[in-house]
Image 1 (cartoon, rainbow, N blue to C red):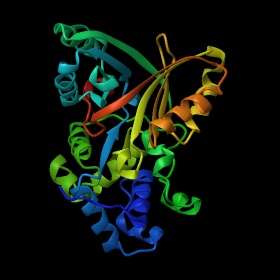
Image 2 (image 1 turned 90 degrees about the horizontal axis):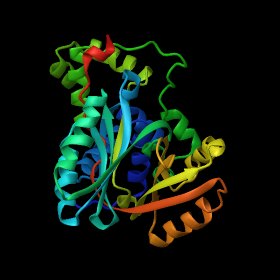
Image 3 (image 1 turned 135 degrees about the vertical axis):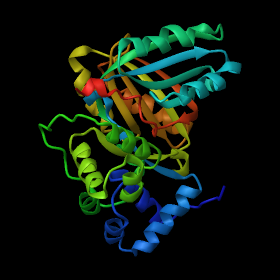
Image 4 (image 1 turned 60 degrees about the horizontal axis):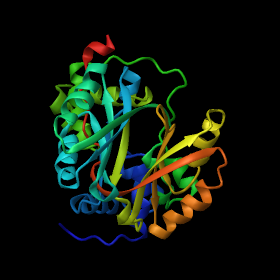
Length: 328
């Protein structure tokens, strides 16, 4: 694998793709003040080196699916194999090894209670190397990983020129077809697949592909995520946080966390803790400062549990097992 040293242009391109992973290179080049060929060449170089990858992501909650945050405590010698098995599932994302390999965290999108229970109550507990499994339903999300401040390299005007048009306040419900599922599966592997590639893979014309991409995106069902390791940008310490917050202050604290530059994701959940967050820091000392000063200043937080991320096994990029019946 090629070793890539990022310069200012690379970082600005990374930020541009975080804003809109499917923005045409022509428009990105205009905003960055370089040629379209330069943007395309830089993107191909970083992708070939494994620095970044744009993927199409489906918000299955808009199709009636439930989202869960799952914690698995297990024996260290089994953690890698269990994490790899979870990563192979199409209904999981953000599979991470925590706490030196004694714990696994992931997110699960389930179509039915049966789908969820098959994993949580049947498959995982079968081995005595799994010590405990807990799952908390995600009630509301306040910040997505692409909103992480560590990606920022563009000014406000450039961000505004790249930001996609907002979805309508009351979008028309979408009914997925077999052709949609084929197209979404291709985007889950490559969010920048061309209209011609999507047309060939879904049996549609290119004009139909363009129209359906716009419709799904405007409905909020389809978005484009940028998979990139924070260490690539000099942030070498990541951690999961579980917080207990007074219910009356839950919304206030969630929005406060979402405004912290260290926070890449925060959501309200069910369970003994009611907020989960993912934070990215320069190093361990930076994480300590964040926990003691920023989180510590939030009086409504009654308890805090943190676990360092040892390794990210899977980010985004696999289509959940969507059912057409749920959209009819």
